Length: 332
Image 1 (cartoon, one colour):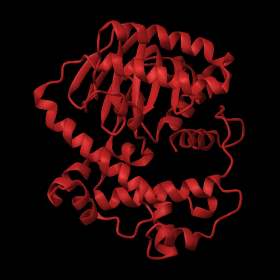
Image 2 (cartoon, one colour; image 1 turned 30 degrees about the vertical axis):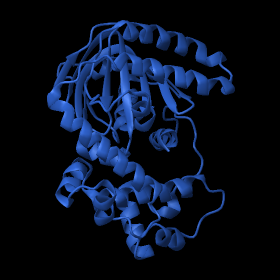
Image 3 (cartoon, one colour; image 1 turned 135 degrees about the horizontal axis):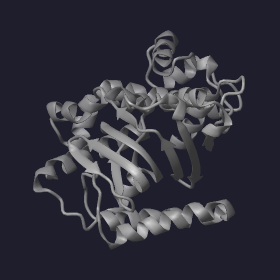
Image 4 (cartoon, helix red, strand yellow; image 1 turned 180 degrees about the horizontal axis):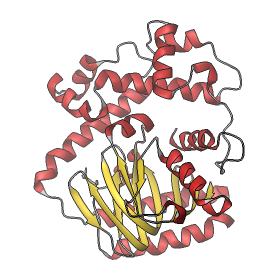
């Protein structure tokens, strides 16, 4: 996916940029920034299960990832940002980091964050389970910015990766992805864990286990709070606390069921019976399902677009919708 603001006017590009980010981020230019000076050049690649890219943009913009953004895009990924030049300041749920060129920051897309930046950077999105499996123990990664030898190697590795991807054969991507995740894990493993965050890490491990079970049993009619409490061996109050940032247990299960049906509809060559899909995913009626579906996605089940096109700047079509569909294809 390529976005280059020079393809249109600065103000039109800014509107498109803000709109394309709106599901995952609330973005505004800094108060003293001139919209006429907006520029952005972004290239993103899908590399097996990873998403890797490079971006340069300015002037200074602020981005806020709030609870509603988290519930909207359901991204269960870590984001690693490596700064090459410019400024990047971030508040990751209380961890405040100002990056220097050559340093990287990792954030958890399931948690709120705020940032202020005008910079050139590389970015890497890693599915939660993939990175967690590579770490020696559960860690609270949100807001970590290690400074060690492996971190410096990672900087060189990402630069070489982005340079070589255009000429990389598809069969080479899984091995490259595994090597990249291993290097990220090696950069994070030596990080000293604050004893006060041990409880947070344990809660995170429980929540990941619960979310993984939910994802594997979305069609199970018994999938509910009582079932999860028994599975995790935790009290109902503990389960509710774990899912509170995600809108609650029942709400999360409903959102994931809707996302699964959306995925089925988008990827199916033949239009699936809506009533059957609703019934198979725990909804009491097709009408109840359709109302919930529209509330979550903004359109009806019958309007789900099947084709996924690369994102481009507006040229008479709905480019923001194309970008959104492209992003969704990377996350499922």
